[in-house]
Image (cartoon, rainbow over all chains, first blue to last red; front, top):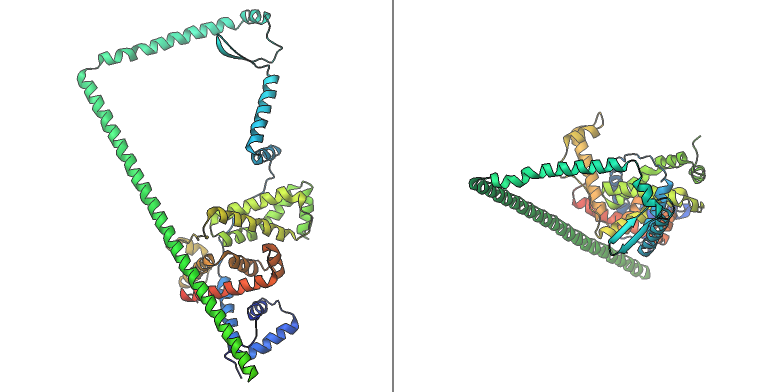
Length: 247
Length: 188
């Protein structure tokens, strides 16, 4: 005879799952099978959950694009370690590096009446005879010639620019100003349109997010209600079994 | 005969990058699938997958073989997925295209499969994806690890850090919710 009310007991859910995934000891398995042979509720549940497993098997993720793993270079490891350091430690490390570099480069920083001056060089400390060496350097004349040439070219380029406003008539100035104003207005309108589009897009994203949240909340409430109803039903089943056993 | 995971791990620890690449080839698909099904976003799942292997590589010298390499990898991936979800502060969303792309469908079709069946197959896949995304995280993780990765209940319990009976209960509740959810959306 088939029972419509399940009489299995308290660990029914776990046993059903363990049975479905073939994770029961032989004796437990035989016990549950003999129960299920008599229990219509358990048979129906096994069928339904088995069907769900069949549907789950149809969900396939997209293909993964294979990647070859290249072990990080030693330098990358140092950077990774540095990135994980606290900020104060990074600052201290930076200062240390700066100090060592300055020492190695023979860096000389001076702040006097002449202002701030920074001088560097890989040779020994700057001495009085250093200026004499520089003055006697053969490239000094070339450098001075290059400087003269550049200054000359700059002056020549500046002349037409300075003369241009005088050459323009009042009508030209008026036309140019109107064109600038029109261009500025066009730019402002374009920016305004972009901002409105941004705002609309954000609003749509927000709206979609809100709708999804509402949907999820409703789903969660329904799930909870469903689980609660199931629990109540099982409790009633257990009570019915106990009452029938006492009678 | 192909090398075991343990042999490849030992060689990787000694600095053999090819052995680690072999491990990546072997496990990238399951790890990507786990990440995709857990967080529901393809691009982020790829990132999680790559980060998993990067972290595994960095932590390899500390791996003592107390667990299977795959379990260790799953644990790293699950932790990264959890971090991702915490950062997002939202339930996973699923990137399901609204319309059906016929070219894509044609590319995915098997030679003898009629287009109606193919559409139905894809619709079912999407319905399952959406229903899974609505499940609470614990139930979803239990179902993914059991159903798609074939882990034992004991392995899942140790991975997610809960008692064995809780894993079974989560699985039962998750499957029950899915049954109702899929039934409501008319999926058979």
